[in-house]
Length: 386
Image (cartoon, rainbow, N blue to C red; front, side, top):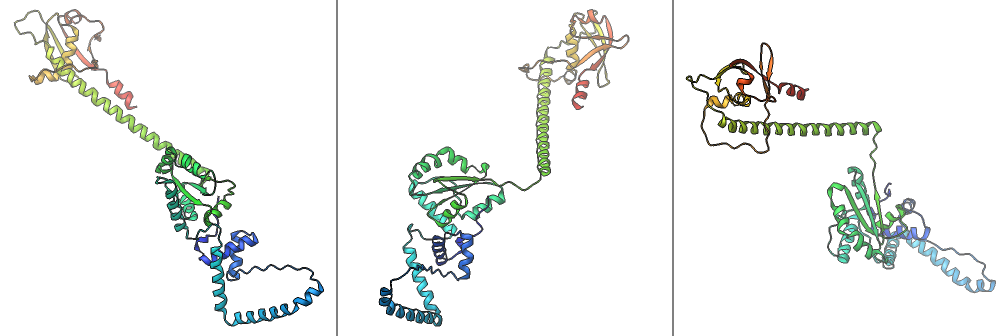
């Protein structure tokens, strides 16, 4: 919906008054009336010519008066031609009288001053409020909404209308409506006017307003092709997918960090309960040679009745056993179930010594054995990277 192409706020007060008089008499719209008034230099002198048949006796009686009036009229036209400034002075006086005869009694102002007057009168009538009224003319608000692609809400009221006060207090000034209109994220420009003002009256005609109070929402659609819209949609979806992937990666990283912290605390707690290696004078021992994932070979003696889980714990906590650092007692991490991510196997013939079968090292391995520590978490890491 387009705004009127003529801004009467740029006209002088005399020109605006002449425009109102001309449109009231001729019932023409503003766009057609202004060019006509410009050609006649804004001189509005409507003449009512009524012709009717006059009786003969009456015409004889009034003939002298008509003759005198004709002579006086010609003399006045000649006088006006010789002294044109006098005619302008009389026209200015007539314009001032016309302003005094204005039924609304409202002085014509510029669009910005008219908007300021409306806001001031609105606050005087309904008290302080937080409605974000646009402090400017309708055309300026329209251009801003079109440029910034914002919603344009037009509100027209009339103080003489019976429903105006209840509509303003119960609807327009409702907290939900005020919060919605002033929220910057909603991108709404609110322009309001009193139809007693010339600009608001023209806006009501342009918007085909037939009932007051009036509220209309103007939405500007950008002139872009469907291809551009589709491209923008694909770009937005790609951006959202990238953000989701980054969020998932951050969550996985945080989970790995929590896992590493819990594992370190569990190792410090578990190493406290690993029994010491039997001395050289102990005869009944199980000698086990372990090839660690780092390639180092570790040989250690275990008591025959040592559970197989103790062997796994020894491998898991080997680094802490090497440090041999005695510190404060560490508690087992809460809500953490440890899982060994390796398995002990014998090379020739290959045999896995898992934890599911339980037993002691003597029962499962014998008096001695060569075992390889094979990690089982490498496959999981490869699957995550893929």
